[in-house]
Image 1: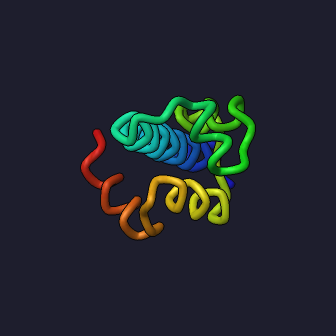
Image 2: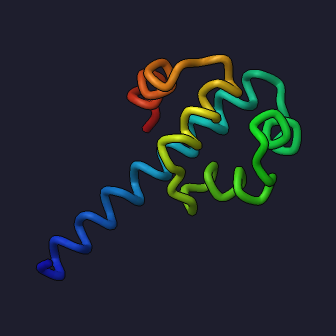
Length: 86
C-alpha cells in the first residue's frame, strides 16, 4: 500500500473513532450514566469504554451493537446520531 494512502486511511479511521467515541460519551451522559455504570451495563471494563470514548479503541461491530443496546438504541439509531457529531 502506498504510504500516503495508508496515512489517509489511518487519519480517516482515527477521525471516525473519535467522533464515535464522542457520540457514545454524549449519549451516556444524557442517560445519566457514569463510565463505570455504563461499562458494567455493557459487560466491558471501564478502561476499555474510556478508550472507546476517547477514540483510542476501534470497537468491533459486536461491541458497537452492545454499546447501542446499552444505550437503548439499535446500531442504526446509534449511527444516525453519529452523523450529527462534529
